[in-house]
Length: 193
Image (cartoon, rainbow, N blue to C red):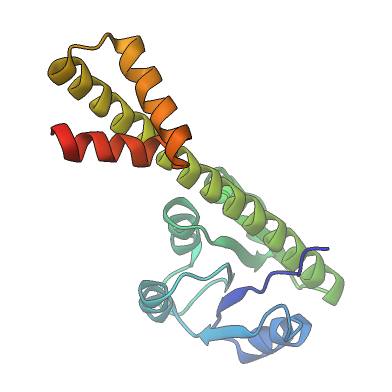
């Protein structure tokens, strides 16, 4: 069984009762790192210093509404964000931010709604984490392909091999030496480049 992940949380609220209500619902084992700021400017400073897994914004904030902050975080980071807004403006705010991946919750919030929202945000954060891992894996694979191609062209140029012979050479040498094709390509590039 996989150990549960822990999450860092940023609560942005000018209302201490709101922050306390969320903090009370967050298990200290799963959420050991909870930061609370009271306005958008402080939130922007906080996210410059650190990436938060979950961001909860109690709208409106004293210096901005908070919707643009949430949308920006969802577009530019791996954070999962939720806005808490008065029920009377829910539809308007939802229409503005849903395409950025921001959750919108109607106030007043019950403890069940808070628990459910936090679970949704954890779920989204895990999906983002997996996508980020896939992206890194794809980037590594693309880098390997670039290096192998560069090594193949050096073998074609320097040793007058065909492309298929150069490819087989790199694969066979990597297997014989017990190294990756990327490492073998790097050896070829250092030798002939």
